[in-house]
Structure formats: structure tokens, C-alpha cells
Image 1 (cartoon, rainbow, N blue to C red):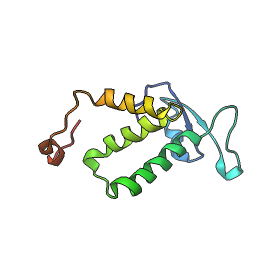
Image 2 (cartoon, one colour; image 1 turned 90 degrees about the horizontal axis):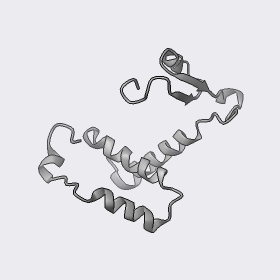
Image 3 (tube, rainbow, N blue to C red; image 1 turned 60 degrees about the vertical axis):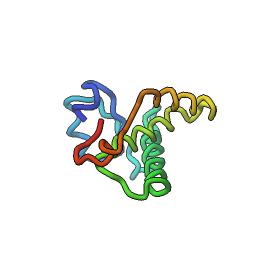
Length: 117
């Protein structure tokens, strides 16, 4: 997390004790699901749970097998969908096509043994 999330950011988490180790670098707000607490003053884990549900559906329904090398690309595609869920379909497709302009992934890059950015 230290490499991906700005120090001082607020982390919304469940009651897992492992999140306590983040308190030195982050503001950690925890929800206690085992005590039937699912939201408190705007703190919840619904957003990340929705993302992981989408990732699982995409994995099982489209890819059937995940590659560690391309995992970031799978996750980026899911985040793209989540971030644009309220955008109409044509605008979402237009956004996707604009992002693809100039992007190229050759077969050689696809099958290379190291990760592709």
C-alpha cells in the first residue's frame, strides 16, 4: 500500500486486525461487520466489495484464467467500468476508444515472460 496510496489517506476497512498496522501512515476507519455494523457516518466497504464482485464476474465470465503478468490490466478494465457506471453506454464506449488511440500491444509483448506496462 505504501507504494500505491498516499500517506495520510483515509482507508475504509472491515474489522480485520491486520489493518491496525496501517495506522502509523493512514487514517483507518473500520466497520465491524461481525457486530452487524455495515455503515457508520459515511464509512463503509460497499465500494470495494462491488469492485471485487465485478472482478470475480469478469474473471469467471470472460477470462476464465488470470495471468499474473496481465492482472493489472484486468483490474484497470474493472475500475474503468466501476468509475463510469453512471455514464451512458455511448459515452463509455467513446471514452474507451479515446483511451485506446495510440495504444498497441504486440503479440511479442503479450507472450513475453516479464510484465507489460
